Length: 249
Image 1: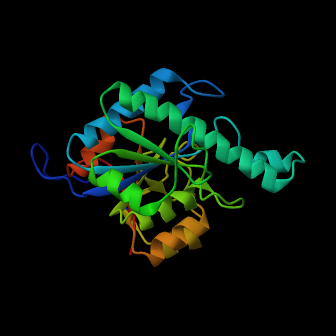
Image 2: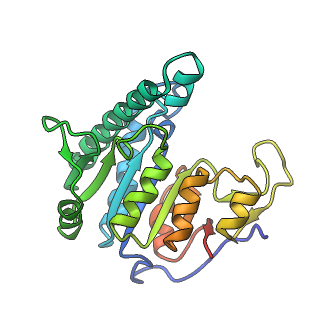
């Protein structure tokens, strides 16, 4: 366990991965607001995605819906769980469309692909078609989770990353990696450079939910946890720089 930064080649070095999944929470899109979408924040994240896209990396995205509606919270307030989860899935479609708009505004061709068919606003999920979009250098934003209640967008991201043959999942958070305890509360929190899937599960570290971690482990899919608030952080890691934690092994 260490809190040192990984350093490596930059400049014109080829990216470390050719196809990746970027998983971000819905809350990441609301900026300093308490709810909804903050357009300048959406635009900033879109610019980060474009900087990686410009490196020639094929990008998939999954965005949560917690800035609009979270199924578990609705269920906790007395709503029937399945209905609440479907409402959460629809929230992810709204976020995906917002990100698509921001990306296309800066010249990045994008497809929103939903696990729940809604042909008037986005494409239905067809794996081979999605792969073809990636091959044509379009960013694919997978919305509506897996299309099933009781599964989180973490699990959806890991599932789609596996289906799309992504080489890694990039989990954008508010901190620059995985810590042994909450760094916002504990000043002595230590960051891991690398940690195994099993240790994440055993220590109940809040990287992704247990189903997502187990699915990534079974498919040998590394999870790279980094700060989405660090300008250029996403691109930097692909260029061999930056501070992050790799979950794998």
